[in-house]
Length: 195
Ligand SMILES: O=C(O)c1ccccc1NCC(=O)[C@H](O)[C@H](O)COP(=O)(O)O
Image (cartoon, rainbow, N blue to C red; front, side, top):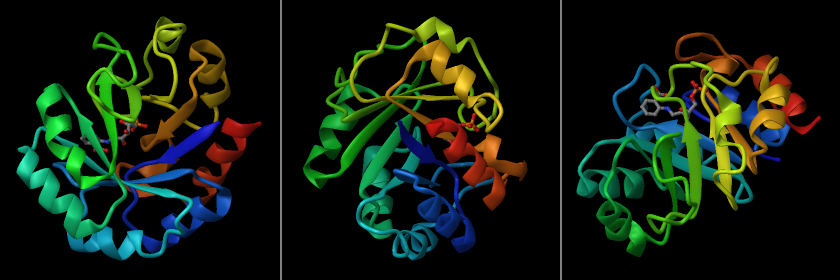
């Protein structure tokens, strides 16, 4: 089970996620209480070993802005939320980064439909910690896709059973308050997701 922990902004939480075995770590670089600057993302990414994917998370920014911020941060993947057109993914291809398309369940759920490497099927409001009908996507997407939206250490097993994803992605469910991560919750989430 591939596990991504998203919205990290403090070195101690990056360390906790890496030590607990996260496969990917996300830095929110769009409007959000979790937002980090490209310079801060670069500092945090520098403490992540090469086997863990570092992801810059964006929503709705012009592709040139995404390109500059991702390059400055030195992340290895770019995650585009919302209704970015196929052309935005095509325009980022030459960066040589892993491209991640994050969409709600009523979008095109074919992994790779927009030339992305990884698909995230998320709640309608990204990063809001809102559970949704995870079972509705069972059998829809295939290949490399993550389930997200309202997951936490207590419900992730149930969500995996319902949707049968390749991996999972969490942010709010490992926080003690909005935007404030907790190392114990990060460890508990990874343990539950892999149980
Ligand atoms: O975290 C945000 O505030 C955010 C804002 C805009 C676009 C994406 C954002 N976050 C993405 C994620 O944290 C995850 O990919 C996913 O949506 C998980 O969200 P959650 O329901 O909070 O676990």
